[in-house]
Length: 179
Image: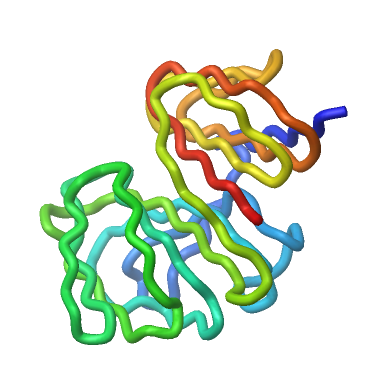
């Protein structure tokens, strides 16, 4: 039996950043309800109002993707990378000294963090039907997606933790596979 947990956008709570530069809304994590220091994996959305330094996450691998806005320039351990194209994931170490400069004002980014040596994540963006299985999160960024009889609207997500399910995407969805 396939297990699908529906995670509606309207149910997410915004948590302000310590530096005041934005807010984060957790989509899902494991273990569920774990804090920012004791997760195996964590997926979130961030509303970024201003640039500045990133928090350090020792022992964590990160993947960040711009999903709304003009993008950012990330300087990771002294090397700048411009992330201006939406839905293009950028991977880096949570151990790295990282600073952000916004390219054209506020933006929304999609964050996937995994505990190094415990789990890995693959982040894809799809605009067509696909099959997802086991520990996979699907989140809609444009249009809608249907998994079995579950319809997801913009920013709604579904976590598949057992079994395999067809996912019909009409628009654009992020698909995060945890292994």
